Image (cartoon, rainbow, N blue to C red; front, top):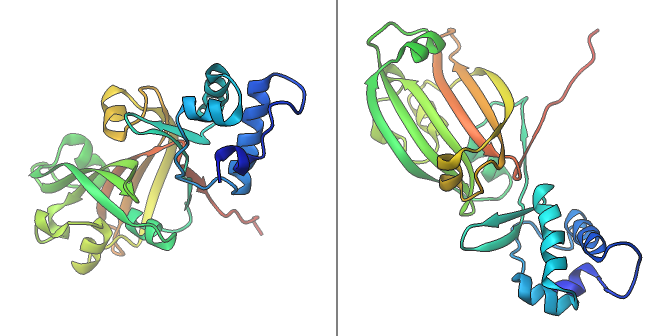
Length: 246
């Protein structure tokens, strides 16, 4: 079925600017599930022909949905329906576990991984003495080959037998070593991807993101993880369950 058939759009029907009507029909189709997450849209030219409207109308409608986070443009690939993921703040789970729970495959593309001495900031955040050895893991996290997040983790060397044991899930490796965090402190804030980050993630510079800063702790109180994760703002929703006091 063509996209026109999926969204039920007729350029001759309705009132108001044509691009607004097309934007709303597309929005409704995405939110109702008629157009699926990660579905690729036809080119602007093909859409214009299929919907019997101008390419300018199509472009303005798509621009509105991109700005609203319902569509994403991937350099060299086209326009896609955003595949949003809900991440619970009440559960201490890894990226790999979050994706597996949603039936999606996860993988990593390494930017860097290295052993070194703790920096002053890392020493403060992890409660480590100057000169303590740490492992650093910098990577792009993918779900179904879609870049979802940039992740920068620092782990005290005592927590892992070596750098090489981390192949997929960092938490899986920590668990195998008996040093998986049992609690964590997290902070979230809105950010904009800079030019370098945007290039790695395949988004436009200045695209909205969510930065999660996390410190994970062992049962004995020692900090075992310091991670900064830049999530795509058009792909992630963070949720938390709140309970009334008393």
